[in-house]
Length: 475
Image (tube, rainbow, N blue to C red; front, top):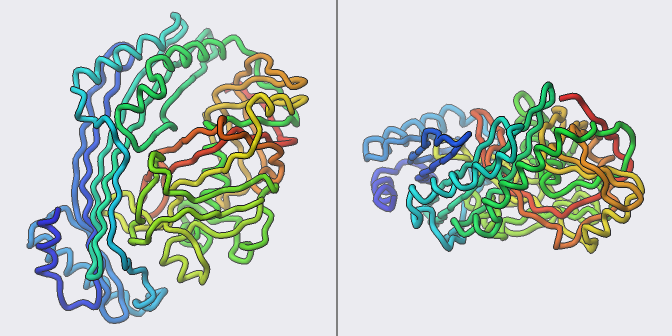
């Protein structure tokens, strides 16, 4: 990659400013389903994203041809776009984001993916998968591992930033069926981290398989979730989705500015809300935190080269700042965070949530349960629906327990709940302590045209919400 950088520096010229973002990525997915090894998926790609400023215009182009001829051609296309769009720029070129500081970042990995042979990794999956099949009622079962390693270099005339990431996402799934009733229980997909194979020992990967299979069977015999207004206790596996959809997406600044309205939608949040709007109860504290190095979306610099720092976006329920990178901040005239991110070398950086975390308070899980007279505990997302302004939502979970007089009761199947974002968060009545926190994340958050699927992280404690509309279903 350093050779490509030097090659590019030799050919770039005739422009007022430039940046080169090189990305090389390899990935592998292994899965054993119903005792059979599925085809092994291997991916490898590399390429360059070139941005130029010429006169009053800015343009970019991407290429997987990293020869001198390929870089010259991409540079020509970027200059052509800069000249063609010079009269259409939202910002003068001197106000566009330009990184000023060199630096580096590397994922914290103790046991690399390659330190274990392919045979050994497949052996681990063949050990875990049968544990999912607790009875003949388990009709489908699967254990999987997904690994991705990315090296990214961002170079400008002023600086050079190098970042290396390694991601590991385990997966366990059991589907149980009896007559017309089918239930699914899963683990791992939302537990992705930046770490090595040591993570599998930490979470007890094979032991989790037995729990997943048993809970899938429990759901077959469970009654349907009752309908009514209840207190709702959400575990971190579902809090992740709640934060993602009803805080993360509404606060993305490009969405607020209207960039996504024809595709991913707008936001109920407007620019004049920041600094005073009561987004939630005073227990709600949400931070943008790319400094927790094991979380899925940690990094040292975003893809515009802005150093990443922890910032509160909501504090004591008050909306403070949007999720907007340097370019969007200049457009809106307000402070944001370092979250301009691209999913690959062939995509431009746009505003994306990264690690968006709900800060813990001081209640243990026993105290949270004990505070509820009549309520429902829900765990692990199964379905989601939210309107184009990220306001009205309806979410379903895989697993639930009834709570009565401060005690956990029986398992419930097909649990769902609905609400309106701000009203829901204003009903936040209790927040778990650090012992209830889990670092969750998803690798497939979609946004942008052309589409970009990117990884995001959400750490959260268990939380209680008052007076929530809960209901069951036959699905």
